[in-house]
Amino acid sequence: MRIAFDAKRAYQNNTGLGNYSRSLISSLTALYPQHDYYLMAPKQTEMYRDAHTNMHTVIPSGIFKLLSSLWRSNFVTRDLKKLNIDVYHGLSNEIPAGVQNTDIKSVVSIHDLIFERYPKQYKAVDNAIYRKKFSNACKHADKVIAISEQTKQDIIQYYNTPADKIAVCYQSCNTIFEQQVSNAEKQRIRQKYKLPETYFLYVGSVIERKNLLTICKALKELKAELNIPLVVIGNGGDYMQQVKAYIAANGLAGDVIFLSEQEATQQDVDFKSAKDFPAIYQSALTMIYPSIYEGFGIPILEAMWSGTPVITSNISCMPETGGDAVYYIDPFSTDDMIKAMRDVSADETLRNELRTKGLIQAQKFTPAKCAAAVMQVYESL
Image 1 (cartoon, rainbow, N blue to C red):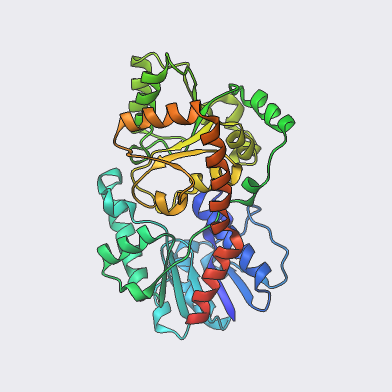
Image 2 (cartoon, helix red, strand yellow):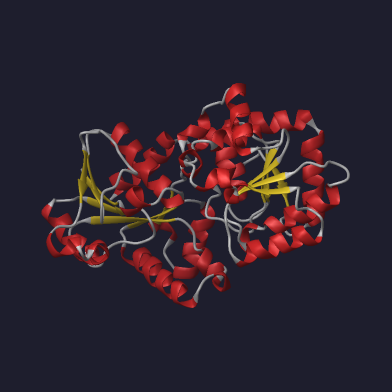
């Protein structure tokens, strides 16, 4: 087969959608070398390099060098036809206009419909754009890939997409989290970022849906008992200021470390690329992820690969990702959070059990398994 991808994120996004794109493309090219893979990219960057001979990067030519967004959303279809592409895969929630009117089979990956469930957390114009792109892709693609059962049910609910048109293909995370870091490296990272010897860890954008404030409220109640600080990796806007206001008003300024804002991380390449994250995860007492809604919950998987105990929500897709390997809470309950933080910090046996189960659960989401599920979709067309 000749398989083409929307590779914009692979070359231009160093986080979520970019990681998904790079991991899937690299796994497919390595594990299924009998096929040819074409990366349709508005521009090529140093962010993604892969030496496989069956991988070909295609960028716009002529006037479309200046109109790359228009090329990607519309006129890329002409190049797909010239290349005799068999399958086109939109890796990030959209497919180009008109591809459904060709002989090319199309697949789209839908990562979440958060904007449909929580529209007030987005600008109205963004909601309108997302809805048009996502619904159009679900309507016209030959097959829709949902990255979790939660996302599949949302696609059915919001866009009336037939269930048999949707395949659930879980995603993996960066393989750097699979490597155990030496004690010397952990100590180096602690010194580099001035991390405490013992800490709770939160990873994710500091937005209302991800619920950092509930951790801070529990931290306040536990301060006299545990006195364990929280390290936060992530940035935010208005909600982050709300969290900071609570921290200041409740004497927690020294107990919550916003690592992403520190001078040591601002221009640090190894922090920006997440190269140092495995050591940060593996040095944490536990990773806390009390999100109210996710498409998959990558930090849960990163923590499980790292051998780090996880406290997370008992709703949305979190039970899909965590299985029986994490400590579940009601994310709306501060009391639940307090109990979880107390239990995990006090019970080494519990932490060891969560580590062991987490490593087993993580095996369900290897890059090879994720690629195999996607290849099965291609072969079904």
